[in-house]
Length: 332
Ligand code: IMP
Ligand code: ZN
Image (cartoon, rainbow, N blue to C red; front, side, top):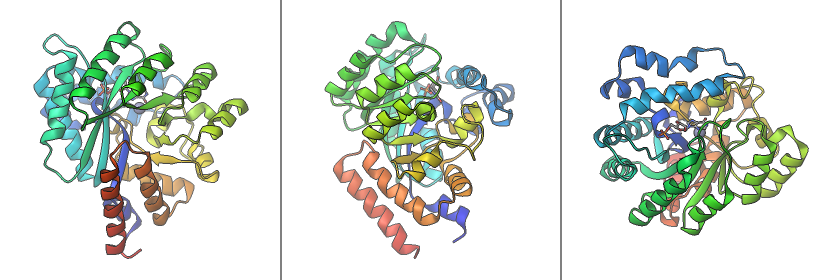
């Protein structure tokens, strides 16, 4: 099997995908966006990134947010994104999204639309939901967490965790807030060290989330790096996102190489496949091109990733069998 084909057909696991950043141009079109709006949403993929690009990136999500302002549109957006991941042979997807209140939609309606689309999915893909706390919306974080916890009690089979995301230049990490989520049985994954912010990173590492996203600046300080090594927390690595946003200079210089070199836990993810013009298969190909990973390494990484998911034991066993069967069938 050709190498790219291998990455495409491998049953994959996606653990870091934001709903509104994962919408493809076709999906945005179906949701009523104009060509101009779609070009705006995708402009980062063509730009030469600078240190300011990450800050600019947060404006682009407005295009998708404008297209998902009512429950029906949120339902369709979720359906389209799940179909895209399924078509890329993703077997297990943890989709994350920030519950949003609009003129014609409450946060509860937003969450219920996403949950319904997940429940209605008839494709062979397991989908779970993580609800995000937007760090740049500081006024409502407590209230947002209350809603998330209530919704988890209502849909425990779908809602598995919370995420901490949004513009890292704004707001800060509040351990007490996330402890509440943990006490309610939610898993916790946090965007961490996307920019240099040693104080916050130290607080996050002391909290010991179940996973962290990006981790770009964990290596910028020996003390922080040592703290991280003590935790052994799995990293959700988003190669193209980091390069497109300019937090990493190039694929070649990406911090993933330190995880590979030191056998640290990581998994490859897309972050916002619509905004960054990528797919999970492409991310796997890139990791191999730049860090000399072989197909067997990707298979091993995927197998290990099963233990980083927020799936049930039964689902983990099912995924393990799926991967093993695939390996046998494809003789490698
Ligand atoms: P949504 O939560 O489904 O609306 O997806 C888009 C949102 O995800 C953005 O408005 C951000 O709050 C968050 N997001 C997407 N990509 C990133 C990232 O790279 N860092 C931090 N937050 C992000
Ligand atoms: Zn992210």
